[in-house]
Image 1 (tube, one colour):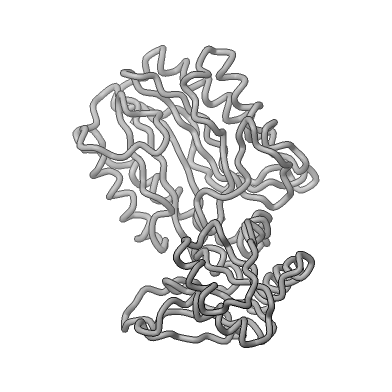
Image 2 (cartoon, rainbow, N blue to C red):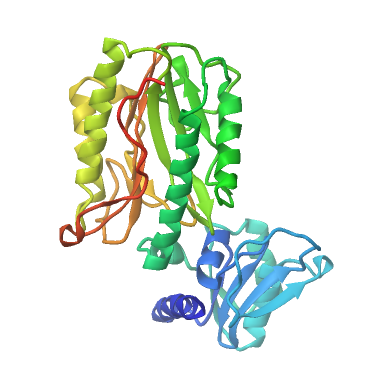
Amino acid sequence: MSEVYAVRRGMLRDRCAAAGSAAALVSRPANVRYLAGGAPPGAVLLLGPGGDVLFRPEAPPGGPAEGRTDDRLRVLPLPALDGDPAVAAAGLAASSGADSLAVEEHHLTVSRHRAMGSVAPRLRLTDLGATVEHLRVVKDEEEIACLRIAAEITDQALGELLESILVGRTERHLALELERRLVDHGADGPAFPTSVATGPNSGQGRHRPSDRRVEEGDFLSVCLGANYRGYRCEIGRTFVIGTAPADWQIELYDLVFAAQRAGREALVPGAAYRDVDRAARHLLDAADHGGDLVPWTGHGVGLEIDEDPQLAPAAMGKLDACVPVTVEPGVHLPGRGGVRIDDTLVVRPEADGGPELLTITTKELLAL
């Protein structure tokens, strides 16, 4: 993997050089991890004329590990009293002869930016923008393998929950149990706070679990994902509890299922982001549920659970192969509940079988 990280840093260095920057400072944790293999809390990565250096606060004994850092990197631990790693990195860039430094302005605070300018007043600070985020959009097969394992763990955790007794248990209890099962099956933790929504709460995106108890006849919507070696996936399913579904539940479920299938089938290299959104959205709009929809149909996943691209009506850009995304349409009817169906997939060309479905738990409307 060291060679992979070196190649990624080389690509970033080339882009910075093309933009006229002699050095770059990466501070956003997911971006540090992408380029360095690990992202200790508070660490920043300097790509400069004197080599690549990871500045990190000195870790306390037993401190959290955020991936294994590339062995080729020079690592400089900074005692807490020695100040901000970003400021120390700016000072080293200046002393190494750099006249400009590209920084992630969207991540740095104003005070931090000013402190860097103070320690190296002759160093011109420019904006790196979302350059690293753009590099992260297309995943290599090693990254996709991590996402595949994360999806397998998530499917296992959800499958086990469906085999247990649910009536009478609270949303909060079920969410905690799902997160425990993720860890039991090998996850580093949940990819995001697990959502469990019942009855009138069902169908809402990222509903915060409450003390409402599961009742017979409820819709039960679950959204969860595993974090495996830093890579995060997402799955969402909706079920009916304890009895055969009512006619309105079947009708609403079939509609959302059809919309989700249309979105999945639109995932081909070269498809516009907005066209994928439109493929799913137009079925729900035609059924007069346009006002009940969230602003997007899906999004990229990887080292963060919400990455580029965004599959939304106004999104600009086109899909590439090897881009993992979610497709997650849903409808929530206030006071009644609703349906969400959510999968993580990888965009693949038709010659390779089309979109690769990572989350495989059944999408049949089960009565649990």
